[in-house]
Image (cartoon, rainbow over all chains, first blue to last red; front, side, top):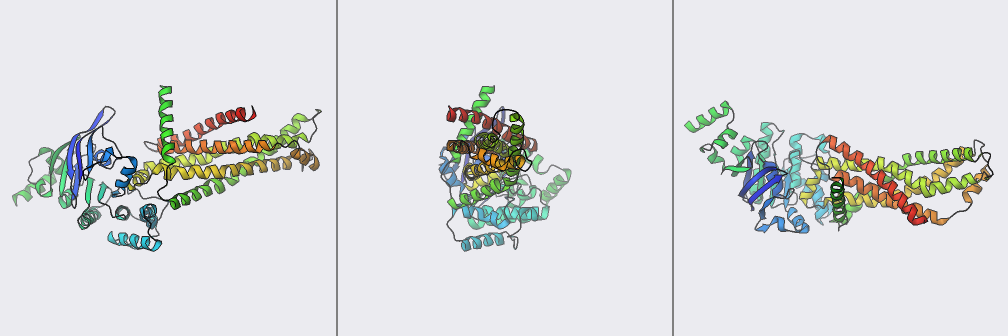
Length: 253
Length: 249
């Protein structure tokens, strides 16, 4: 479990996060949602230590993350997988080399064991025969899947996904969402997803927090979204008249 | 303001170097990356270094022959002057100034691009010490390969001087060879290698610093690449003066 406690974060005079306290649970897809500029990415990067909080604490299973030494932080990070918004695959490496990189760096596995693990991860994300392709030679959706394969290759305890659906068509987005959800449940991973995709909220939102102006404006799960009377949530989720109609008809049923 | 900026960058540069020289997670991965860098810096720069060196030697020969014409200085001194000026000064300094432009800007752009595409963040999150993995192999490769390039540059410059002076009839083959073999001081070669090692460290560490901490977009990346060359060149020239004072004083 990851717990953020009273997190404040400022960049110069701009206070981006204002007293965030929340928990992210294992085996569940924990979503951080909100409009652009609400502080989602800052919170996500702060949870993994790419930003440091102005004040507040982040606990990984009761361990205070920011009180650890660099070496201890690296040890925790070896239990973390991350899927980046733009996948962040290394351009000069093939798909196989990208996925194998953490294994090369941190394990003493034989070449054959690594090969098997890479192939297993590629099969898990429903990708085959792309081992020798470079990232530029595969589609955006495939790049996301390779990113997921790389994120899970070391069997992480924590998985972070920054806008996993950005730039993808609705169908592919659903596939990626389902994949993340399945992997989370199968391996009991604490998954934190930063998104503004409403489909993701309704499909895989086990534990959702809505950020608004750097504060948590609402928290709940996908089943509570329709019935909530929180105005900030409504403004965000059902922004267009069409979506409002859909919500009204769903509630009438 | 200038002092504050200077201290800020010096502090961050020192911290970066401290993080860079730490124990590798996996020696083989660092070895592989170092070999790749040696190939990029060494083989990739051979042609440009060779070309520049041959012309340095040729121009030095032609200009000294012109200056010494009609004087009482024996003509074979031209060979001696070319040898010593290239070994002591021209080969290490000009080669490293050129490499700052070619290799340094390339390193800054490579690291800056990785920063902007979140590759460095991705490695950090995996638990990789990115300063060590991305910078240390570049510095080690440069410390090994650049002195070799400088030695080649010195040799090629002497050959360039010969080609400009002897086949054109400006001086005889025997005179040039006599000059090159006269008054040889082995310590000058030591000075050449000291300079090349110091310059190699300066140009790689400054270029990596500029690239590693890039923020913003393509304009900032271009600025980092330019800064890498400008600051490396300035520091190389400053170090050149200091080494000259220390080793010849």
